[in-house]
Length: 241
Image (cartoon, rainbow, N blue to C red; front, side, top):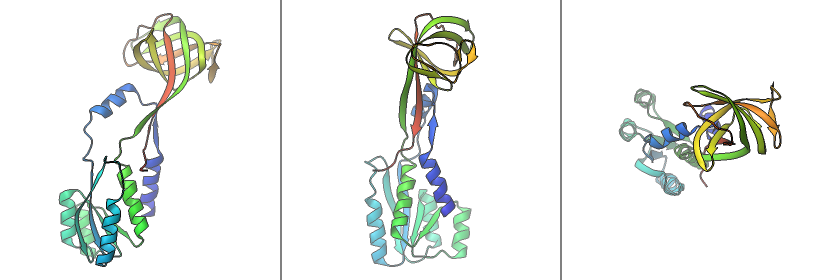
């Protein structure tokens, strides 16, 4: 249980850096899994069962995830509970109950998750964390700097080598660049290398000149006078309020 909780914590805090526009489009077009969190609840006595079920229904996701108690009852976990959970793709929560070896084998065979607790707050925290995993991540963009293109030295199918003046902030490698011709956004690219006076540079600041290598998804016709807006884009796991 501790190992599983540690894994969930790592995933919750993880952020995917520099997500490209193509990645975002793929996320938007993909069909997400059902936004229902189905559970089977078993408890030792009726009072505990009522308390657990009522508390689970109070976990708020602002309507994004619906918690559904597909089955509940008093007593140890039985084969019928495993069958119900398997049929509805549910997790079984057990509070102060046991699971006989034969039932455990059935759960493993049918790939049904059974989570046993003796402290109600730990059970609720587990449910809350599981529901957070179902929330769509938040897209966070952070501005790094701007550059005005002063020269285009080489244009290839998937790379452009150019140079220019940093007009705001700074330029670093391994960030995204939004390529603009006036107010028109032409494309997004990735900054793979930055040079100052033909020497690899970690960062170049406002007012300085530098050379850049941009990775592109397709051939990009960059022109003198175009603007590069540098930024990072992260997918940040959301948490329940």
